Image (cartoon, one colour):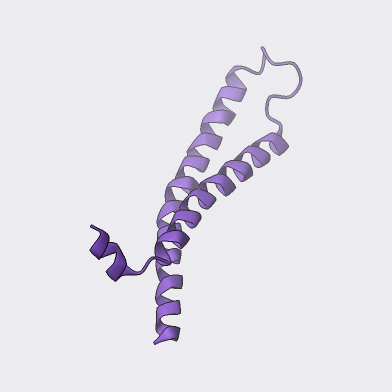
Length: 90
């Protein structure tokens, strides 16, 4: 029983994080495309290189980590709650 409960918890957390990762991926790709397009338009106004790849990678990485943490932490907390206790409280 304990092994099945652990497997169920892992699968639930994986499902929730997977559902949260999809919009993060789509938003990251759309944001990169928009940022690159705007960098081409505003390149004349910016001092230096407006298309610095390191800046793009850093921003996408930091935002992805924050978004995945925002999905993982609540999913992990919700997976630890006893369903019977949660139903009794309501």
